Length: 297
Image 1 (cartoon, rainbow, N blue to C red):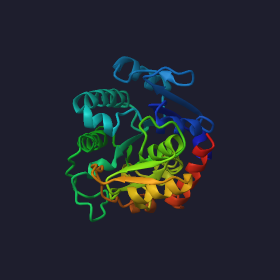
Image 2: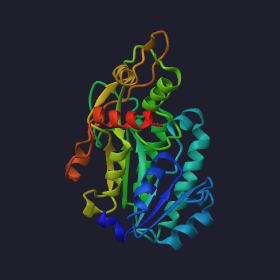
Image 3: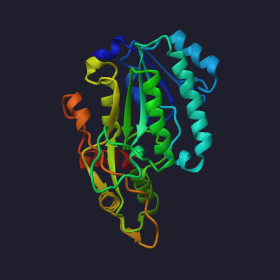
C-alpha cells in the first residue's frame, strides 16, 4: 500500500457498499482520504452531489489526486425509475466533471456495469471492444456515462462490474446474500425457476485490491474501460445448492416462477494483461470464506 501514502483520495458514496469498503482500507494508508455521501454520518462528510457550488468547492479545496465515484443509483433503481435515477446521476457527474475542468491529472474512477452487455446473446464471451446494444435501463444509462465521462475527462478508469459479493453493508442484497439470509432466517432456501440463470461474480476484496492499483498508469492501468468480473460463471442452481449445503438446509425450486436475466460472461483478459498477479479469488474459496463470516453474525 506504499503508493497510497502520497495520494489524496476522495470517495463519493462513502456510505454505500463499495464506497464504504474502499474507505475502510484507503483511510489507513493514504496521505489524506475524504469520503462524502448525501446521507449523514460521523465519519463521512454530508454532501449532496446535485449541489453544484458545494460539490465544486469541496473538490477544488481538497485537491484530490484520485476521485472514486461510487455515488450512483443501482440497477434496481434504474429498472423502476429510469428518468429520476438518470437525472440525479447525470447532475452529480456533471458537477464532478466541472470541478475537474482544471485538474487533468486527477484520476477519476467510475463504476459501470455488466448490464451494458444486456441485449447480446449469452452463448459467447465479450470483451471491452464489443459493440453494445443494451436493452436494460441500467445498461443504457451506463453505456452513455462511459463515453460521456471519457470524452470530458480522459484520465478516467471505468470498471464494468459484475455481481459483487462479500463482507460489508450491501444496500441491495445480491443473490448470494439473499440466499444466505434466507437460510439463516428460515432454515430453508427457495429458488425461483429451475435456477438456470448464470452469474459472473467478483469478490469485494478483489474489487478493492484492483481499485487501489488503478490510481495511476504506473499501477498498470491506463485510462479506459475494463471488465471487472471473476473467472467463474455459475448457475443460480449451483450457487443455491452450495449455500444450502453449507448451512445444511434443503432447496425448494419453484419451477413455475420466472427467473432473472442472464448476462453474458465478460472476458477479464484485458485487466489481467494490465495488472500482474492473481487478481481473482476462485468463487468456491470466496464463497466459503464469506459464508463463514455470515454464520458468525
